Each structure stands twice: as C-alpha cells, then as structure tokens.
Length: 419
Image (cartoon, rainbow, N blue to C red; front, side, top):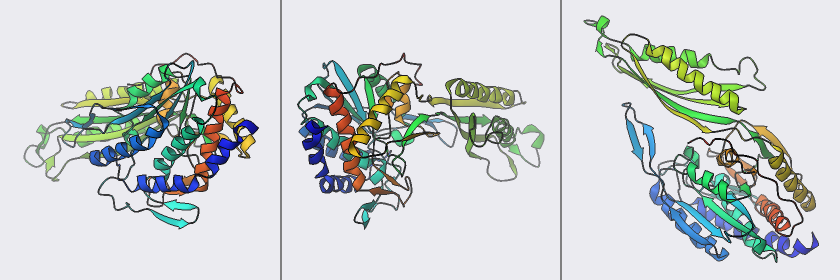
C-alpha cells in the first residue's frame, strides 16, 4: 500500500474541509419536493465537482405520479439529477452515486446545523446524505491524483428523489448499471460502521376504494360503504403478513401505512384510500406478495357496488449477496484491513438505490458513506472523523482496482428491473 500512502495522507488532512462542505450543504434545504432548494444544491455540487474535470449535466426527471385525497392522479414536479462522467471510454468503469434530497421539507422546523462536540455534527441531512456526498467527492478527488487513474472511467449520479423512492430517477440507475462494471453508493453505514449486505425488496401501493354515498338515516340501503370495503381489504392484506409466524426472519411483510376516508357520521362514505407497503427477502416471495395483494383487491371488488383501483407495484427488487457482490465486499474488507478499519456487513430489510443497480446486474456496495445515527429525525448526527475514514476506504478501493492489485468482479446476468 506504500505507493498509495501519500494520497491517503492527503485525505487525512481534509477533515476540516469536508466538515465545512457538509455544514454548507446541510444549511441548504433540499427536501424532496423543494425544487428551489434542490436547484441550489445542484448548483453547489456542480461547482464543487468541477475540479474533477468531468463532464457535468443536469437531467430533467418526469413528474412523480401519486394519488391525491380525492382518489385522482396528481403530478408533482421533481428536481433535476446531476450526472458527471469522466473517461467514459475507459476499459473499466465505476458508478458512484448518492442523493441530494432529504426528508426535511422547507416547512420542517429542523433546519439548523450545530456541533454537539468536536467530532459530532447535528443537522438535517448531515448523515443522510450530505456527509455521503462529501465522502464521495473527496474519494474521487484523491483517486484523480493516482498515477493509474486513467485506467478507470467513472460516472457519478446524484439524484433529487431518493427519499420518496426515486420515482423519477429509477430508470437512470438501470442505464448507469448497463454502462459500468461495479457500483459504489454512499448511503450511511450503520452507527458502528457495519455495511449493509443482502437487502430485501419493497413495493408501494395505493388502493382507491369507491362505493356510493347516501344519507345514513333516510337512504342507508342505497349507500355502499367504501370504508367497510377498505377495512375488508386491510384485513385480507394483514393476513398475508408472515412476521407473526417468524418475527426474527420474516419471509414477507405487509405494512398498512395509512387509511383515509369518510366525513360526517350521518353520511355513508363513498371513498376510502388505503396505502400500504410490501417487503420480502427474496424475489419469488416479493412477487408472490404482489400477486396476493392484487388477489385481495379482486375479492373486495366482488362486493356489490364497490370498485377497487390498485396503483403501484414493486419499486425495489431484493439485492442479493451473489458471488460478484461478495467478491466486491471482500475487496472493501481487504482495503479496510490495510487501513486499520474493521469492515463487516449484515443483512437489512431496508432498501435504497443500490437495489436498483443490483437488479440490473451490477455488483454494488451501497453503504460507503460516513458513520452517525438518528437519521430522519431532529437527532440526526454525523461523526466527523468518519468522513476521512470512509473517503480513504473508497479511494483505496479505486486505486487498487486501477493499479491491477485487485481483480474486477464479473457481472452476473441482470434480472428484470422494477419500473
């Protein structure tokens, strides 16, 4: 590793600068639907990444389609994704990505950034994922100093919609996966530095249940209660859950997230909306759950005067620890060992954009970002010392791959990608 030591030492001296970048970026509200904030964030990132000498472009995304409280489709415009490429014709190419959006909207009271102590920064998105942006940027900045950098081309995608499921950018990940040989995503590690290994898959649905409104006293028999029908659907969906049978390792999860409808109690409600999520560890089970959800809706449709429109589907297929991915994990572990970092991984039920890359056949590690905790809450914090730690880990991996010190994992055949 001695030939890489000067560059790794350079990264070690970047902590203060990296912390400053995270603070600056975290003070920009880039909630997923705050288009002004996302545009400002994209400008900041484009200016910062310009030193890398790649070709940068902003990519328009199609609007997000969702079901509004009236049961009608509603279009929500999305921000632009930032794509940066360098040496796209190189024989080996790496995808690097992380999102610029956060869960904290413009009106959220959590907007300030503060130092808890010398090594802990609290603020909206400092961990998820402004810290990941800083790690990715400095890792690439260091890699470009490597004599063998010309052996690798790279492509960066920074999307503005990950926190709402990447509805507009999902197709970009499939396209990027087709052009590259490995994928590195800079989502945060677990608080102790453990990486996410196998990830389950997930799907989101909205059921619009329509009946017939009527006066509850005068014409109750003419009404068709949409809430009763929705309750029937909820019971059937909940019966699909396997968590109660195997709480330690459920094969399938159905979570009823929201149900709305009705109004005055003297009116038979004609509309109810149910929103739910399905999750499973393997592809076959996830597909089976999706089919069972549709079957449950079909049964409820048989009720007199009731219609059920089921919108949505699988958004992320499971990310498997197949041999190419395991080989890439072992490369990261070896780089960690050289740096004195204990790299471990464990399975998780959460999903991220790494699922989309893996579904397209790209060996991917998706938790190369910094350490911290409290994500998606006012307690979100970033461990500042992990910024340089994780930048060194990613940079060393890239340098060793470029220098031929590590073999490149062979891609597997891609599976169908959720649309």
